[in-house]
Length: 413
Ligand SMILES: [Zn+2]
Image 1 (cartoon, rainbow, N blue to C red):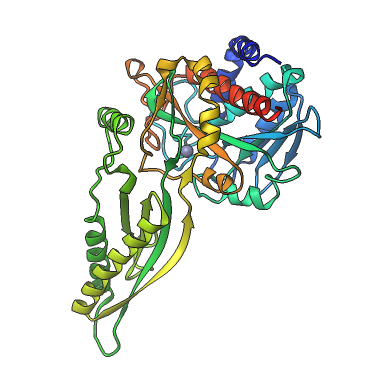
Image 2 (tube, rainbow, N blue to C red):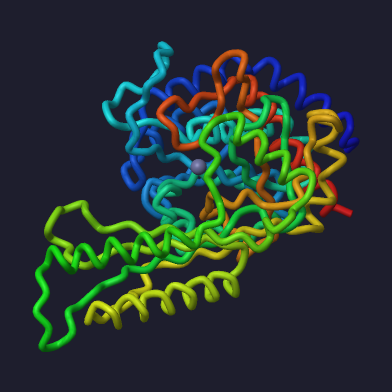
């Protein structure tokens, strides 16, 4: 089957589907659910997939949902993963489709991702005769808590059969119409520790004093940061330009975060959380070494002891270079060469549990431009005024459909 011709058909069918895509995204946006509580979202997605030619399994690793489009079980399967959960953020947008739930909001665009997943399933169902294999759609819950991917993998989402490739996308504060890619490191990995201070035997120290020492530890750790998180859209644009033009130092970035555990004031004396983001585990190990050296000094001076409890770790997310390169041409056809942006470095401030999927099968994730500053839509992730130019839905559906179709076609030879 001629891939160029198929991509043209995808373009046309997506055009026809645009109003429906917008309606789906707005429904999801109005009904945000936190990580682990995505029951309405899962039911909504299942209902929306009714019109697609897929077999659906629900309750896969929590509220995860898997939809299989099977054309021929003897041929390869490719997978598309999208996430579903929202954040504990109060939306400040005034759009009629704003969140209906006080204190909860789709501020990371997972409503957009899920709508795109549904859209791709609908489109590929229509052109199933043109597919050189099968497609598995993975709707993943609990991304924000970085627990959903592993739960779904343990529930078998990457087996029977194992997909030959997996794709994912995330909206980004870059102009709508653009897609950005890297051929290797896409996002940082993350290590999380709980720091616990104890008074040395024989020393008298009030709990308030212990808290003050914990605060001092946090300040010292935070001070290691050489990075300033871009806060305004303009700062963010400048940062993306830097990722596009040269990696200068970005491949060796480390982000330190240390905060006192004050969810229950008074209940957590002398405790603090430490988060380290960096491009690989060697850097993260170096970072924790540096932290220990400082804590040693502080504790010696204050007659305290400390313990670091590992609370979790997530690998860095690397795109499969061969897979990325094999799909550049197909993506160019979708968005145009001028809108396909190669990044020389990863965005260092976020993590993604898509990383777990790429530990098992070749995978690639892409940044989907969602911003339109002229319309006041900046697509700044995790902010209370997060919103996207909804034309990104069309671009996302086309791009993901093309990646899946193209990868199956290449595997067919
Ligand atoms: Zn996200």
